[in-house]
Image 1: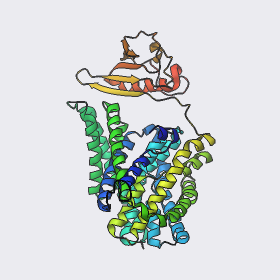
Image 2 (image 1 turned 90 degrees about the vertical axis):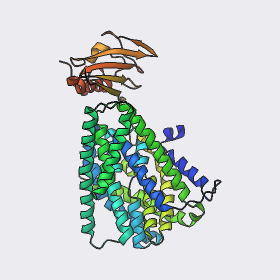
Image 3 (image 1 turned 135 degrees about the horizontal axis):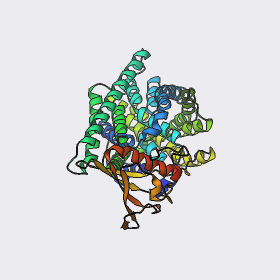
Image 4 (image 1 turned 30 degrees about the horizontal axis):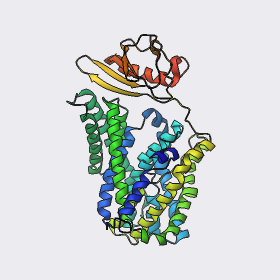
Length: 477
């Protein structure tokens, strides 16, 4: 884990290796070849992963990135599928049907890989927002394409396919936003009997969004991501506990998914497909992905350094391998070879791209490690008193360090009532200087709860002069 954190390498590849070691060619000698079960479990794991990713997506960062992410998820996927399929057909000699399936499968950036790597690599918020939103959005059209190519081969009437994709995305988006809003409203206004029920309720609501989207013949994956994103930005009670629960559940889902995929692969059958996988991966990484980024982001004003980094940061992970089980389940000819090519491609190019992202970000001068760290704020509602208790953590790198309590200039109706420093609690005075590592207890009335949190975050990013120097946050009046 420590090596992964420092290098940007998704540590989940280690669990993929564990699955291979447990398989029939490894020391475990476990024989497993149930592609249908793998697909079902993989879909369930992807729902959890997208939920965790959506809960951690900040609306203020993703809002300006939505048009660019949508372009990458629609136009970009089409470009990537076409270019990669052409490379697989003309350079490797695969039939068009197999080539299109591979092109569609590997054109989806993996949410688990992107979330695990980008949140450890300090990149500008704009770049991170586009990449995270893309990884959450592009699973939906890619799944539709893979299913279409696997059941009928090349589609004769392409406009029917585009219409089907647009309809499923629209249905999924509408259901996801509606379920997310209703769930957020309910959790903010209904006091559950125990704080530990809030994380479970959030996961249940997200799963409901996926189920509702699938039942309505929409994109369940888009629905669950949008529902989670709405809840993640709704200032729900006991939020840090919910985020911690979601992250833990996401890790369990990813670990189980990678181990299962490792069991499914048969290493001694990969030898003949290594070179084709490397060739197709080279076309995808060096031609299709850069062309996808350039064409999709042409209408947007983005520096070439940002486009270069996004071209290299199109990380693949378990999702393409899961999607590669679809042709196996539907009985497509040479489906085992498709799976093997995708498996080798994902492993090799993830090992190359993940660790080199921090280096490339520094070379392109896009390293944002000097930005101020955000606060961790947990809210516990006080229903009968119409107030809130805000538990505020001052992390390393926060510009709240060195600010006096009186200089916070909180709105009228809010006050810092307790400071915990190195295990010792004290009631602060207006001249108490805050330090990194402090835990604050802030009491606020209901009408100024949002303004209080906004002010605290503004000071964390802009220091005591936040609001006067254009660093955000309202000053007290």
